[in-house]
Amino acid sequence: AHYATGQLHDKNGDLQQAIASYSIVRTRYAFSDVVVASRIREAIDLVSLRRPERALDVLIGIESIIDAKPNDSVPMQIDADAANEEVALVRAEAHTLRGRYNEAYDSCVVFLQRYPSSVYRWHVHLHAGLNALNSNRPDAALKHYEAILDSVPDEASPIRQQALLYHA
Image (tube, rainbow, N blue to C red):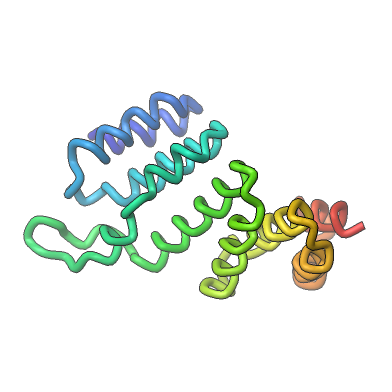
């Protein structure tokens, strides 16, 4: 019920209340079937509120939950690959917000290596370019922006437009 309440708060744009609901799941129901999804949603909302340190704290140890084999007390709850992909994305964004551009860039590169066909790949390329620029690596930034410009054909795409802006 707390997870569903968090989703309702998310839908209504009340991120503070959503975080509170997801936090209840994380702290009181650590072995529930929605704990991973709840922790990911909580971290996403914290990043949205520009609280990256707290988002990273929420994600500590989540891989051990994702990779745990289902048993009587912990049922199989999610697709582990999809969950790991979302965790990697949130971590990269949180590092960017913290101003740790080298860590963020490295997180983006690892993400792109692990999930080359991800629906988030262009978003991650954009973040990798931004982090490369912020860490004084313009050649690396250009590589990421060019990947977007070469592969996203829709001229009106916001990702393409941002890549074009930074590429110039």
